[in-house]
Structure formats: structure tokens, C-alpha cells
Image (cartoon, rainbow, N blue to C red; front, side, top):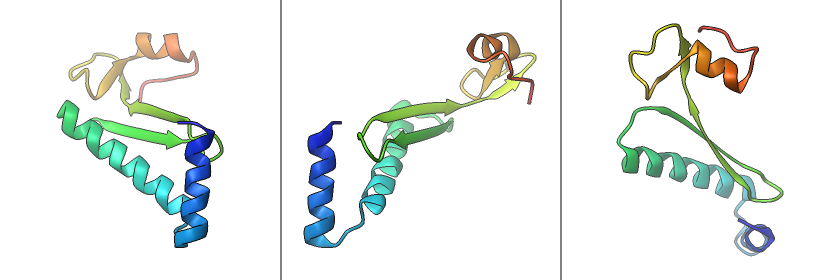
Length: 90
């Protein structure tokens, strides 16, 4: 997304009286629903949209475990440490 998108949201807010925050929350919720529908997973998905730039970040929230039993819901401690050395089991 880009500045034009943010400007369009500003126009909607101004003309229709719909808060930008409500639109952002609805878009984030729709993206989570779409992800779950398309990938058929109950994985915890988190979507964050930057309110100033419109940049979208999608995260999969996983439990950190010693031994992975479900790769869609869990991540090994070794893999987690590669991302951030401060991560711990649990």
C-alpha cells in the first residue's frame, strides 16, 4: 500500500465520517480471515498495518517447543533462537 491509499482513507473519513482506525481494523480482520480461508489453518495469524504508510506485516504466532509435533502451530527452540536469541521454550 502507499500514500495514495492513506489519502483515500483520509477522504473516506472526511466525506463519510468513518474513522480510519475502524477501516484499518476491518482490513486487518479481513486479511486474517482470508489467510485462514486460503491456507485452511487454525494457526494464530497476526496482521499489522502501519497507520501512516499502509505497510502490511503478517505474522504467524507459534509456540516455541523442544520437540515440534505440529509445524503449523509450533517452532523448535533452535529455529526460534535463529530469529531472536532471547526466545525461550513456552
